[in-house]
Image (cartoon, rainbow, N blue to C red):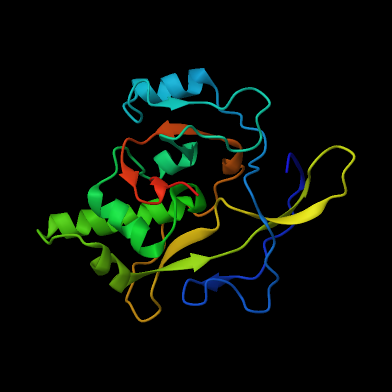
Length: 210
């Protein structure tokens, strides 16, 4: 798949208890992300501000619209770092991702806000944060997104399931939760994607990648 034609509205919403609506058709996954507007200058600015470690991130090559990370890289979005993502990942955060069987590029910004909330509260009250403790408070909410892609300019467009921005950590309905008072609309955040090195490895392959 080499061409992204358009983004229709999101499909049905469901939680990880069902993973996806049984009534919804599943389409082949696509690694297409679209054009990235991240530049070397933007990454250097994040490095100067201490958000990124020098030499650990790079923008995709010009014209690249499909994710092609190196074996030690993951795909991330600039706004993930505004929401609190930092590398290297805390080992507990790695265990949380393993428990829910999700990857960084599949998440939304809200997920990192809630991860930070859990880690901060646990450490503030001198409690040991754990993946199971996080799972008692949060579920993984799935919102599938479908696009039309082309294998070539002359090929017929076909439906495919996006693999980024489709999961959000949400409070369980039975858990008392704070009133939402943080940013929930992020504009065209998916156009600011880039690669970041992750030295941690996992039996599934490079950690936190599809």
